Length: 417
Image (tube, rainbow, N blue to C red; front, side, top):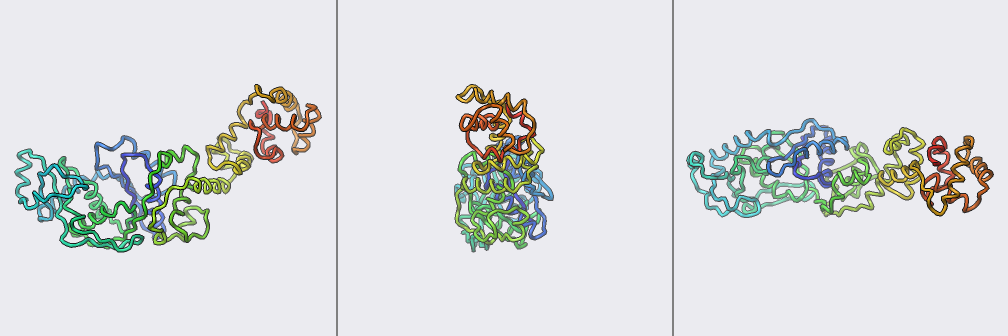
């Protein structure tokens, strides 16, 4: 069983998606389950509707899952397990409210407080947290990417497992939920290495001794808002291209630079990912996106622009010599079908050509069309081709008109106006 865990406190980032894709891919390769978990333990930071938005994004990438749940659904189980550790002297009550974060090492002041103090503190209303007892030996585990990881007892520390309000900390909740969900392989970013050691320690004290496989991939730097999934979608990048790009990162052993997720399932090996961090390369993503747009079925591509016409898909592909995203293509197609501007230098010639075209018969071949236009308009050379291009495409430059014409001829009266 594999899982993808994410907090509904912020926009989903491209690095989050990479983790989700890898967990899904390995689950598919091994024919085991894949689940989604919303890590909503930080109640004050949760953004309403963010969990739904995240699920909608995952659906765009067809990352099918067996189930989805929120950690808050399991709070009573987390509390039960925390109390179990307390009763077994594997955790302790702490009234030191100054150092309750993971970042500050625990002073040890309350380490030897008797567990019987728990009931007294509850009845008195004195604020307290519950801390797990730090290990006596290094926590050691083998990672498929990072190698053997050793974390000292002082690094693991006596971290908080239940906060003052009785809710679990993220680390403790994650350990409990992975145990309860039967997670057998855990793929996450390398900034979670300390969390993993703490979770291993927690599960060990809870008596969970099942073998879990770990793979900590390099962290993808959060460059800017454009690397959020919403930002990439707004720029016109398509899911297949984003998946392709993310699976290429740090992986040189690939049979082809351009591929789909189902194809990657056949050859991908999680152990081949480099442990060296890689920066986000927008130009590489643009190249990959262009290739996937070129490979789309023509009719399917046309639906990105509100059509269901293979000719419009073919028309869009002509522009992939100069642009790379769906948004950029949309601007090109809109310029063709939008009302034209007759106020510029070529406005008079454009009006002449508009009148000729509106009264012209349908021509299947461009050469017949252009011969007729030349004859009726009495325009030639630059006085013909520049204003004609402006009238038909809305731009002075672009693909050859002889390539464009066969694809727009059925819309000619609408376009030339």
